[in-house]
Length: 349
Image (cartoon, rainbow, N blue to C red; front, side):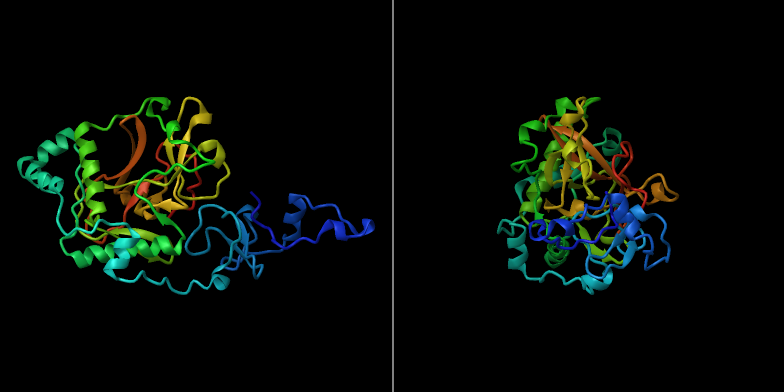
C-alpha cells in the first residue's frame, strides 16, 4: 500500500486535447514526487512506506510518530492532527434513557434469576476448586447504578466518535461471510470446546448486559494510545471480560486491510475458508481493549487478558478473559500476535 499520495480530483480525460493527455504516473513516480517530504514530528524522511501525507495540508507524519499511534496506513482519506480538529472528545450525555436506548437495554431494575443462581453457586464453590478446574467466572457489575451508567456512557462515547454501531454478537452481512461458514470443525488443528458450565457463564454475562448490569470497565482516551479500557473495579483471574464481536468476513478479503483491530476467528485447513472479525462498523468494548506486542520488552508484564478461541455449539467464538487478578484503574492489554503474527504489531504500545 502506498502511503505517500495526494488525493486530488483528476480532470475528465475526454475534455483534454489528445496532445495534452499525459501518461498516468506509476507508484514509483508518485513516491519520487515526494522525496523531499519529512515527518513533522521527527524531521526524518526515512521509512517512506510509513509516512502519511495529510489530504488537506500535505504535511507528512510517520504512523508511529503521530498520537494516537497508527499501526498501519489507514484506508481512505486521512487528516493530520492540525487539520482533523480533534481538540477534545465530547462525552456521551449521562442521561439514563439515552444510554439505555443506545445499548437497547431491557427496561428492568430487577436482577435476573440466573444472577441469583450464580451468587448461590459462588458461595458453595471455593477458589481452589475454581483454579483447579479452570472454570470461567462471570464479571461482577458495579453495585452503584450511576457508576454503571458512567461506564456505559464511556463506551457510547468511543463508539460514537469512531462511527461504530454497538453490537453484542457476531454479525453476518451480505457480501461477506455467511453464518454457515463459521464452523469450528474446519479449524486446522482443532478448536477447544467450551464446557457446558462455561457456556452457561457466558450466557449469564450476556443476559446481565441486556439488563444494564454492565462489566466494570471504563473507556478512556489517551493521547498516545487513543481509546483504551481500564478496570473500574477489582477483576478476578478467569473472569470473562467480553466477547470479541463484529462483522465476519473471509481472511482472503482482508489481506490488505489497514484495520488494526481485525481478529482471527477461524484458521481453516483450507485458507480460503479462514475467517476474521472486523469491528470497524459494528462492535462492543472489545474493540478498544488494546492489543500489545508481546515480543517487545515489557510486553508480557503488561498483559493481563488472554484472547482465546472456543467452539461454542459448533461455532467459533473469541473471548477475552482475565489472565490474572486485575486491580482497579489498571489498563487492559492482551497479546494480539501471540501465535499467528498475521497483522502489523511492531508499533503497538
